[in-house]
Image (cartoon, rainbow, N blue to C red; front, side, top):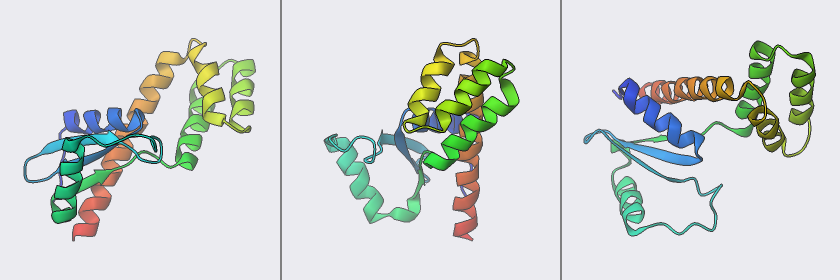
Amino acid sequence: MLSLTEKEVESISNQLIKGMICFYQIDKKKIYHMPDDEDYFNYDLTPEEEDILDEIDENPDNFAEFTKMEPGQEHQMMQDFVDRKVKERALAEDLVNALSKPKAVTGFKFLIEESKYKNDWIEYRKGKYQDWVKEQVDSFNYSEE
């Protein structure tokens, strides 16, 4: 059964927010992270990262993989933030408008970074990602049964 400390959950969620993919080595209780190849397709793995991937291939049951949210989940998280936290109607409308366009994440990020809600967004997103990591732990444990 996989169980993570709050510090491990926070560490993994912070890496996922940065666009990384994480692997948790169960027997050594160690976290590895590397760029998610979907985001960094020109990225060359370091020899250490190649070794970790080889070890995962050899013993997949000893590793739990943590991935970032899917685009639809990210989009819903941004929409929920606007609905729950943004009180100014004009900003809320601008954010919702940004979410309805191509490059929604970029538009949302640009608007939120220039607003008084920047820190609220950072904390909200961090909390949602920590919940996401815990959901992945639950899924891992369920699939192991």
